[in-house]
Length: 55
Image (cartoon, rainbow, N blue to C red):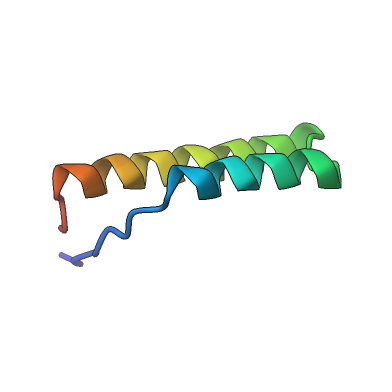
């Protein structure tokens, strides 16, 4: 099995991604879906990092 290291991403960065997405007009069907998927994954990785998972 592969081992992954979880790198925490600051909440401020997630908010900045959201703000830039709005400013650049990424809020359109497919782009919005992709942006939300990335945002959700960042949040999940942050949660794993806080719990101390490194596998």
